[in-house]
Image (cartoon, rainbow, N blue to C red; front, side, top):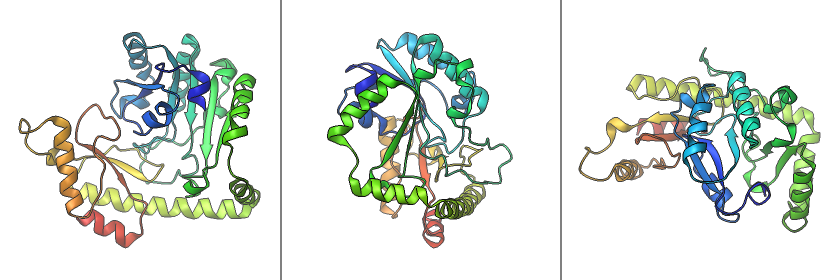
Length: 299
């Protein structure tokens, strides 16, 4: 709906690298909106200086950019944006009159990873937006699929002060609304605050345990990954040392060749999914039963 209402076909939405790869389909299949990638590394994307990359992409992309898309907490990196970076991006959007879409679907999947460099989660809505950006340009997305492991509900939320956008989305929902069953289930979950508190607390505890197990194995084996993680259920790992020799096949096919070796061993990591600037990076999902996770890491 945001693609339809904020942009025209072939317009662009600006996003940093790496990022969840399916946004290209989410915004492109029906509305024809294109993802435009600011050329950042996983570390650069979380620095206030990332706006320099946004400025460059905005100038050089050759498309009409309508919005900046953030994923906070981040997929696939598993980190949260520092407050100063959020403020810098908001000011950038206000300067260029761009909509700021903050996808906060992992907001309750934030846990104690034991990493002292991890940044706590800050929702864009918790900032004093009026000092940074026209509040009508800020739109937050949330849903049940991650925090409540309920992707099958197909139930999400849009939080916006933009009345025109709200009315446009409301019109679309007359024909494409959530099912009554999903709404009933979702409402029952949210109204049971005791359940929400206990469920999210247990989820955070298990995610923290799985994260620490995963990173301890990666550290032991000398496999590099993005540090500072404390959110989501994945670690962004660097398997470039294990790619086939350079020059034998194309760079991306080197990733696919490694992915096939992993599949042959019963482990699936999707190659090239997160649009990393460098090849060889994969998203490792650790939200498995402990025995399954240990076996996968061992393989």
